[in-house]
Image 1 (spheres, rainbow, N blue to C red):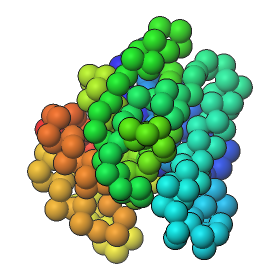
Image 2: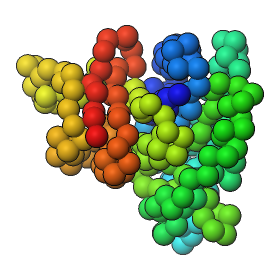
Image 3: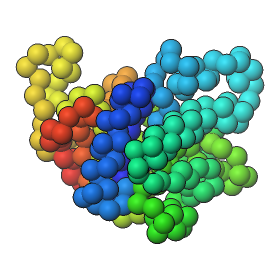
Length: 243
């Protein structure tokens, strides 16, 4: 089995989600079981993006727990939409969220850490359907409250699930064909790297919009999880990132 992670850009509209569905179908054909982790739809100013949900009221500054509950809805909406469109495409699936997903968190609201992953309900669901969708960026604390795990936290969700489920690897779908030698928007000679280690990747993640959340990459290194970064819009081979 594998874990596939689709970010906000991949989920932004119907056309881009058709590409996601094609990759999920391919994953099922090759690996039989696929856990799909999604981010909220689009980026600001898209209405269901995390940043826009945070701006619904200034009062969120007085309640981080309420703020986390609100922004977690972005990934839940994305999961529901993708689930319906997968069913429309003839791909049975199940969405597991909240306590069902088995992701337990601790620490501070807005920047929690994953303390444990209990995949029991995911395993049970995979006995009935090969595709399980998990909203990223969130877990449940010891009091049963929704807690988010920092910006880019859906990447960490995917890697933590990959470790807990002993997946062969975790795939990340991006608007670039893989890890590039330089920013293609600034350097025309930038080339895709076919393979690298996680240690080689880490220095490239100290930017405002890293290709993978650095905390997630460190988790992958600790758990020895192979990563595969590839483009959402093509079948071109991406970049393998080895432990």
